[in-house]
Amino acid sequence: MLPCGTFNTRPEEDMAIVRTKTQWLLIAVGLVFFVSLGLFSPEDWVVWLILLGIYAIAVLGLHILTGLCGQFSMGQAAFMAVGAYTTAIFESRYGLSPWATLPLAGIFAGLVGLLFGTPALRIKGFYLVMSTIAAQFIVIWILREWETVTGGAFGIDVPAIKIGGEKLSDVQFWWLTLGLLVVMLILAKNIQRTATGRRFVAVRDNDLAAEVMGVNLLRTKLVAFFIGCFYAGIAGWLWAHFYPHISPEQFTFKDSLWFLGMIIVGGMGSTTGAIFGATMLRIVDKTTTDYLAPVLKEAFPGLAVQIADALSLIVFALVVIFFILVEPRGLYHRFQRLRLYYQLHPFAY
Image (cartoon, rainbow, N blue to C red):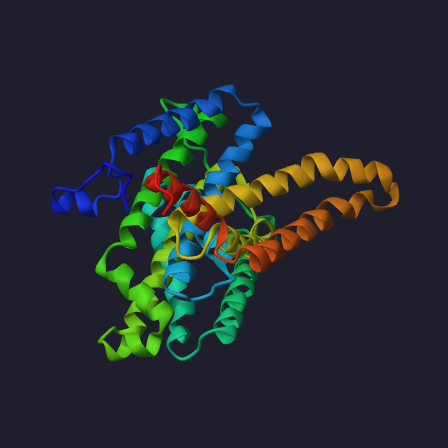
């Protein structure tokens, strides 16, 4: 649906993602705003922006796997760890360039995703969730025990990205993260519009009906697992370069829960909703950790050590429960309502 007075005159216009000059202008202004945000934000907020971008890329992968194809996964953090360790090992031990390890991180994570996605042909729902939870713990256990390659529990150092012999500053790393996020967002949006994306939706809605119509279930589900885990690998590449030292403890089951919560809050099946959900929960986490937790620590000094992590999980759970009960279609549905009002204005219908 287009704003009143705007008409499509060519098939290309009808298929375009961005259709009006106003939309192009808003996108350009938004990009300029986010690029300049790193220059004027405090250092801790720049770090927050970088982590938001990394999380958003991982959530986009989960959006393709779970939101589009309906294959629930609770092991996204483990696949992110595969991408991070692939980056660290190839760069520190084999001397590869960071730009050469970027696709390798995604490919290796995707291949590991294929391994754990194979059972998806025979199981689904609760059983598939349990399978991906197993992937989370198996991958982290391998990274912790394979000391000769991964460094074990102590982890492994990661060479910094350098341009002109200088290490990237936090602001420059934010620009790199933003650039990768935009590219991965465009890819996710276009995957949704391809024949493969439509097969994902068909499998999600009714896999039996999709199979009757000629959709190869095994191939479709494995492609979804590969693409979803590929995104996690790219997020792991960024993570590995942002933190000069990585270890298995950085990729916990709690992170996988956060990723799944982000697509629930943002709205299942929407690329924009994935970004909304990641932003919403990261703001909730930042507010809870930096502003609410210190107040409660002063009020309850005996619980000062445990209160930060516990409060973060409690607030996260409350937010997710609220959206499941009150707005199960997520933030993107509310955004659509506002956009629909703009498009139909000044008419009331």
